[in-house]
Image (cartoon, rainbow, N blue to C red):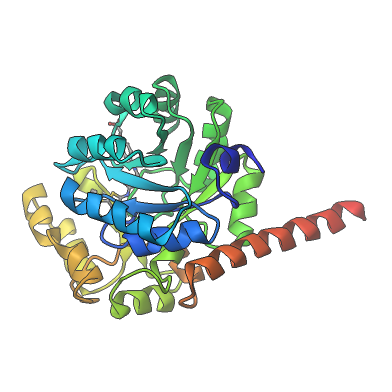
Length: 313
Ligand code: TUI
């Protein structure tokens, strides 16, 4: 047991990232049943849809799970009220400031874990009453900050006294132990769970993640202030060449509109947004969520055991 497993009532300190369109009730329930914290992604869905997801997850698991609220969503207010009404165990947030919701979530007994991409923002979340922060480095997929996990995590650990969960670039036991060495008390894993058997994601998207190598990850939209990490494809080639010639934010948004759904639901690996972290290069096969967690935890045990040997010499 550590701070995070105790706080969340879970077996292993492994959280699943709140991936829009990808993280629905089947994946979340499978991760929770495997001993981690499954998370249903609110994404841009409305409260009725997410209520259905929560209820279906409850049919599949009696373990705690969370809901991720993406704060750029027009339904963010509704989803916060929904998680309070449904008494969901935990909420993670992304892409914005959840400050105004924290008091009401805490009053309802919900564990609040904002994703942060900077030290200043982590401190603000601690002051606002967050139970933990998820420090997400720029190796992560989707919407990212500027600082890498290796640098962000120890700086956030030094700046706050609530537990820190590391995210971005962690896909196996080695990465998880590395995060613990930096002072994290838990890890959030996204990309590796994207290819879980229980993740209802078009096979074409999963295949691209599995095939990805070290140079297949690119960041689009830095100029908009909302940089997004995805796998290289025809869409990114067109966007990145247009970005060089000066494109308006409106034109950029138009090019990306609906492209995540295109990737996840329609399996358009050429013109869909293949959001994934740099750790896609470490992801080599489709496995059940429970096997992924067992592999990460088993890998951690092996690394810790080898460290013991090293220092014993
Ligand atoms: O949120 C994520 N990852 C995401 S959200 C998303 S949907 C989207 N698609 C296109 C453009 C924008 C969003 C896809 N992937 N990760 C957590 C995360 N949060 N990373 C960075 C942040 C973040 C950034 C700025 C959190 C807070 C923030 O500013 C807070 C403030 O207001 O000061």
